[in-house]
Length: 321
Ligand code: OAD
Image 1 (cartoon, rainbow, N blue to C red):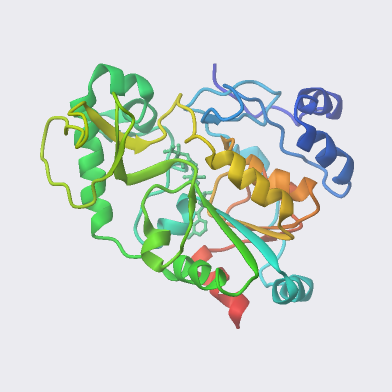
Image 2 (cartoon, helix red, strand yellow):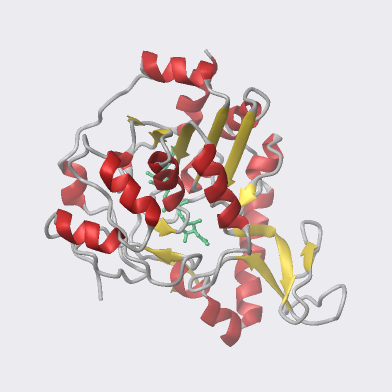
């Protein structure tokens, strides 16, 4: 089944769908100015990694592009500069949360996941196949070959001005939370501490037998499957793959922080992968001012109080000027 952009979701369907999530009901009541609200349809349980369809509440296939061109063309870029209100809020805020996605690392040279269709990324396999739970079961050496290739690419890359700005922000506010979907470790390389990594890290491995986690940044192996340093079992990348659950507690912690923040930035994410994309929804429902930084509009754009169209590396440093 492939989600196709045909029409806007009806409000009654949206309410019905969101009934199961208390955040969504609250959100629904609060969101008056927005004509097009993102709707969500979960493919798996609360913390299961899944992609949402905003179209007719269909459950999307993992290959679906969820930013249909019809949707994009209806919208014009809203703001190119940071508003005075946002500057004021930024300067007075005590509790700030940032949710980052692949776009924040794009200016470092890390390819984003979406935008190029479902093209082959490794040995003629699309990302959704090579990075899947099924592939770990079927061919773990091949998964490692793919992740070793990615580690090799990422090892050469450096944080950009977006990572650096976000790292500076942690010392600027009384409470600051960075939640990332990125597995590249570039936030930490820029100096960010206590990053909530919703999708794991390419620099860690996890034992399939005893669940021990190991830092593998300096581990060199060209082929095969590395053995657990504790029990000798098979290691696998400590990354959330298609069809898997998020690390225990990571989403819960991020959601708790989202509920208490007053200013929430959503930077460089297509906002189609859940539950990560629900973090700004939770923040907004709890009363936070939500700001999106992205060159493109996303299903979350209409939920945001401000949309800053552009590159994270160019826009985020402007807040300190
Ligand atoms: P996507 O590739 O889905 O989206 C990247 C977003 O970044 C797009 O909306 C782009 O418009 C935007 N973008 C590109 N360049 C940018 C820039 N310089 N500054 C700001 N934004 C920019 O990446 P994610 O939303 O992070 O999961 O994808 C979510 C998850 O899907 C990933 O964590 C990954 C993938 O499946 C796992 O691997 C578990």
